[in-house]
Amino acid sequence: MKTLKKITLVALMLGTLIGYANEDKKDTENKAKRTVKVQFNNVKKGQTLTIKSEQGTSVYKSEIKNAGKYSKTFDISYLQDGIYTAELNKDFEIIVKTFYVKNGLVTFLKNEHEKVFKPVIRNNKNLLYISKLDFSKDALKVTIYYNGHVIHSEMVEGEDHLNRVYRLSENEVGDYKVVINSDNRTFVKDITI
Image (cartoon, rainbow, N blue to C red):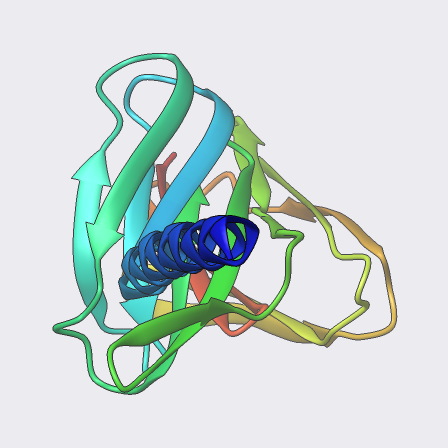
C-alpha cells in the first residue's frame, strides 16, 4: 500500500512538472512566433535596415550605429497578414530575409538569405562605367538621362554580369542620371560632368 502511494505521488509530481515544462515551452514558442529576431554579421556603421511589406512600403527603417554583429527583436503582432522582408542595405549588395505574418504570428519562408547585388556606376570624364552581378539572369533595364531627357535606354537579358561602358558627349556638360531597373528595384545615380 505504501509503495502504491509513493508511485502515485511520484506520478502526480512528474505529471505536474511535465505540465509546467510544456506550458513554459508553449509560452516561449508563442513569444518566438509573435516576434522576429533579425540578425546580420559584419555590418558597418551607416548601413540601413528596412522592413518592407509585400507592396514595398517601409514599416521600419533604421541606420546601423555600430559595426560588427547586429541583432534586434521586433514585435510584429501589429502587422497585417502578408509577406515582409528584412533588408540590410550594404555598399554593394542588399541582404534580404523573407518572412510572412498570419494572425500576428511570424514564419520565415527560408532559413537562408537572398543577396541582391547593387549596380556599380562610376564615371571618368565622359566615360560612364556600369557593372552589376545578377546570377538569376533577370531582365535589367538601363536608362541614361541628360538634363531630364532620355539619351539612351536598353534592356539586357540573359546575362549574369552586366559590364558596359558608355561614352558621353564631351560637348554636353551638365547633369546626368542613370536609372537601373532590376530585381524589382530601381537604382538611381546622379552624375555631373
